[in-house]
Length: 131
Image 1 (cartoon, rainbow, N blue to C red):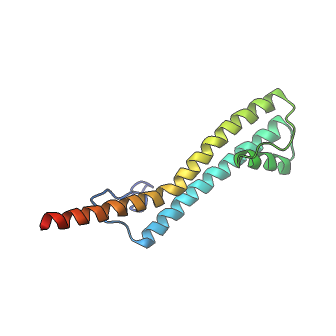
Image 2: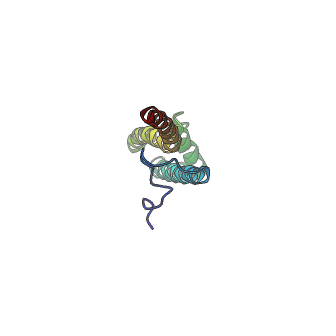
Image 3: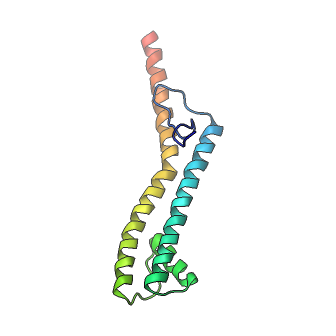
């Protein structure tokens, strides 16, 4: 079974009932795991770049990569031209990762709220039409 065939991964359409809390919790966990993997892989890319271009130790590379990934900016002075290009590209990439991770974490919650709101509206409209 692929990730997208899983009923937890497939979002319900407006005509379907909202999923149970247990399934919603599983959906949140799955989205959180994907976001965590993306952040960990991005941190690994940043560490490798700083270790390769700037010859920083693993701890210093971790500090610089995590600060850029978190939006704070680099800590160490970047001396080499390759390191400066890498830091600029990594900062642009990190901004996109920030947006994607935010969307991954918020998507299930926003979908559930919007789905429930639409579902209640359609129930009220159905009751008006029956009268």
